[in-house]
Length: 339
Image 1 (cartoon, rainbow, N blue to C red):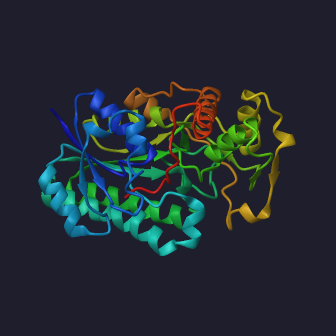
Image 2 (image 1 turned 135 degrees about the vertical axis):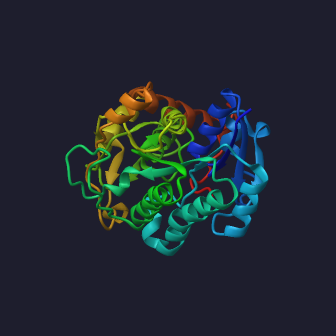
């Protein structure tokens, strides 16, 4: 039975990845950072029905000693480093924390693997935000990076350290440059989930309007369930590498609103307003990925379309709010950060 260690296992991607690996017959372990919200920290895993099937280990990526001891104890065949302070907007308010967790945290995990389990295969969750002020209209593995937020800068550090450890120490270390990926398990602070939650509130009469920032920002959105499959495929390759994981389709926030509100039979223009208070200090205007390498070398293509994903998210948020009104099962709100 192969054994995997996942950091950020309580986040959106970590939960879907844990579920996927269990289906593949893995022994799944997770790094768990204890916090005051411990009563809800496993809600995503619980919602997927796998919380009792994974083994948790108390630790924090900021603590190299603890990270090293966990790797020594688990002796994983595969390590997936998904943990980060992953909300871009917060990275301007918490740049030091973001740099430590998202950047140095990845280095701690790489160092722990190098020392305690150098034969393990390592996956680093890199981000399309690293492209930032895009240097090419369609971004591939060869596109130059131009990060535009403390989060993106920290991710870029972790990305290059992954490559450096592969080249310096011979680790089987790969990085997935994942474009935006969403699901009903997305943190409530992210714009897609903010939109679908707003749709549900308005549909059920719990709110009348939804306030957003830049409606013209455009993103390449896919489903997290598809993207964790790509992570796994990277670690099954004989040679490690970097891969862009994207749909090849970009959509504005404005158009995502139209899709989500339209699914619920609502006219988005009647409910959505934009405010400068929610604008980023340095905006990433458009991201559009070229997943050709992932398709050719991994055999990966996305299976869930944008419209189906938006519908799934709206339905989940409707169910969650109906539950609060006493009429349906619940999906508890949880924040995105997991390390």
